[in-house]
Amino acid sequence: MDPIQLNLLKEIAELHEVPEGAYNFRANGQSVGRQSTENIEITPKSDVSGIDIRIKPGTKNESVHIPVVLSESGLKETVYNDFYVGDGCDVLIVAGCGIDNCGQQDSEHDGIHRFFIGKNSRVRYVEKHYGSGEGTGKRILDPVTEVYMEDGSSMEMEMVQIKGVDSTRRTTIGELGKDAKLVVHERLMTHGVQKAESVYKIDLNGEGSSADVVSRSVARDESYQKLDMCIVGKAPCSGHTECDSIIMDSGRILAVPSLEADNVDAQLVHEAAIGKIAGEQLIKLMTLGLTEAEAEEQIINGFLK
Image 1 (cartoon, rainbow, N blue to C red):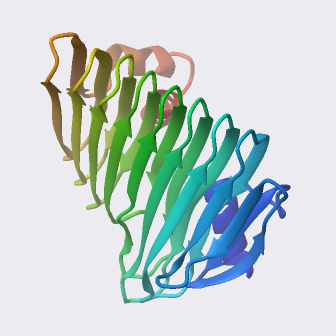
Image 2 (cartoon, rainbow, N blue to C red; image 1 turned 180 degrees about the horizontal axis):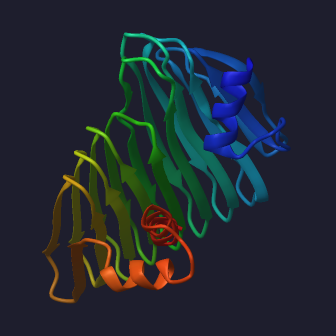
């Protein structure tokens, strides 16, 4: 990888060198490095672009890294990655995409990820998006994440997009079995004239299943965000969605939390709040010697942490 690609890799996966464990690195539409382990096998698909990741039952304290970087203007690709997690696993999966576009043509990566999580398994999934480059071409990311969770499984998802992506539509679908648990933490910031849409549809199918979907976002300049979160309770279950947003400048935010109860014992709650930075917060930090701009940055960084 060249220096630009290596910097993208650092931003989206916090990698400064080849990680231990299983990995698949993709750069400008091609695989540039792949490694399987005794318990985690990565194989390329034969019919479409993408990979299959198979994790043996009982695998614990292992990781999979599958970052993607694009530094070629005008490149557009759709990649299909399927994860098959056996029963009784405890693993970390790190994905994400970084686009550096210095040209005039749009660059786009759409990652379609499907997770099939076995009984009593635990998965932590981290997906970060990042854009850079001085070109006029857009940096576009439209990821789709599908999660199918068997009885007693749990998944924690960290979805982060803080800088440089001109247009994104993130779609997340979940189907949970008995006593399955899904926790999602989304952090999003847009600026300029960027547009970002997050869509979540979580079906709580099994008794005792639960979902907690929380989004924190900041819309700056003339950017636009839409947060559309839906939890469907089809059994005795518990679900919670929360949209907490800061609006600045001429930004616009549309929050659409929704709940659907198809069972009398479904307990579902949603919260939504949009507002500007409180003046007393700015004043307090400015009395400590910060400028107004520095105070705003401190507040935003703390809010999105």
